[in-house]
Length: 236
Ligand SMILES: Nc1ncnc2c1ncn2[C@@H]1O[C@H](COP(=O)(O)OP(=O)(O)OP(=O)(O)O)[C@@H](O)[C@H]1O
Image (cartoon, rainbow, N blue to C red; front, side):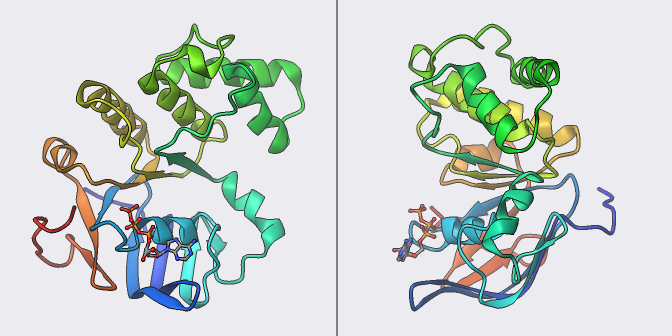
């Protein structure tokens, strides 16, 4: 596969900390535009900490990192919303606002990211819901939807601002196998249309069925299947 020379994620000698503990060190890798990469590793190995650093939730103290053109090392809190407009984030626990409709959940994000024109907002909400195969749920409350449908709404929310990359932290962790495949197909389709994806997962069936490049957190380092061979046996 050919990539542009303009990576969406570029890490050089990054160390990741939680409190005073070093979780990962010497992390150097790039993710290119339109690439799909898995992030695996045992529980507690640092996957979420790495993702949090990339989306500006955990300050970067050592090393250099660029995400969607933003320098993460020098990112200030008031720049974080601008970074978030260029990326999409999908969590395991859907994190929808349960006291408002699907459309209102999406509108909330659009308003917060500077969309003021009512008809553009309405059109964009229809577009993203259509994109995730849920064009008829705009006026439903999240609790009226299945788990898989709720996760599709979360993915729709992540797509609102046409991100260059989606960061997904165990996005199928709460879903049945059948529903998981539907969500994975959706991620593949989104990726095929040019959005990069970095997905943390514990699900080895996913890795087998949709094989892609893998980053593995192991003993404080990040191994990269594009550079070296490693076993996945203890990766879950
Ligand atoms: N907010 C926090 N404060 C202090 N330590 C934390 C915090 N969050 C995570 N840690 C610690 O950092 C280490 C890495 O955790 P992290 O959540 O990044 O791992 P993970 O690979 O995502 O795990 P899992 O697969 O269970 O989600 C663990 O030792 C964890 O206990």
